[in-house]
Length: 433
Image (cartoon, rainbow, N blue to C red; front, top):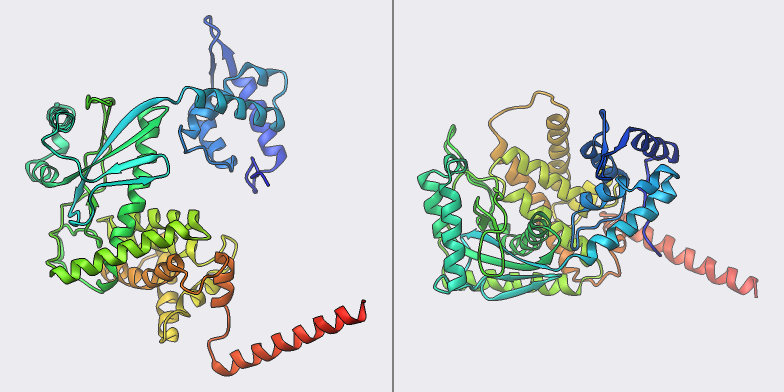
């Protein structure tokens, strides 16, 4: 069954009206190209379309490039309808995909990379190489090009001495992909790297319960394996392919926790177990999305944002979009032996999330405590969500399992009700023979 093109929540009248306004605001230039005038410029329409179109085109090219090509198509003049736009969209996508043949090397500096994060990892269309040699000619050129870029007058103010020193201490990850543009290449490679680093951090963050930072000073993220703030795009030979760069949210690189060999070995085992579980998962895509969300949340040094992103992760893995938060909190709490205490913490986090989102006054200065509480609420649930040790057929079945009563008496009553329902079904079958 093909996925719906238009997202629920946008009516036919709304989309048709938008397309009609697009056609009315377009003008044909002397060279035959089309521009939009007035408040409905290309970027405004593209933003609305990004929300209204439900399909994702992030495999090889930017979705907004497809939208821009489609809304400029002159065939919309004769038929500015949803159906015709959908047809033009797919044709525009096919034309752009036919030209996706350029190789890019996306370079990411990895802070605190553990020793076992080495070699090549193939993830979808991306090859992530964590074992590059800085003595190879291509890597030497990449390092040189990156240094030249950081020294440019327009970029130098963003890279103070401490930041440059930390970037230079990082292990380089070189991600290789064929894509339609540097921006598309970066977006895809970043997503795949987030998945791997999300697993790396998830495999070790469970032992982190609290931290006392000095008030008034910058604080590092909760997670320790990070992407330093200078990601660049190069061609196959190492030359800079894009004049700009990508900058991760960064205060400073936290020192790696000192671990004994057996602790690092345990960290590696956890990581391998998670990788294996994701590769075999019956809801693999959602597992991968959750790992991206996990990395984004707990690699963020802004701990209020980390908390909010952690809450979004919880909402994503605890049920469908339309389910009540109270039900999701019960599910997440049910994996704990002291589930009533966890339910209390879940309700407390819900209150804080709502207060922050709606601009209400909350007690300031405890962002660090709240962020760690969010970590310890969602981390055990995400581990079980990915590992699926009871081999559920889908995440809905996993959620239904967690919805079963906590109290032993209520569970016994539910079991009796289920047995009676099965007996009734059997009698219905016999009666209707």
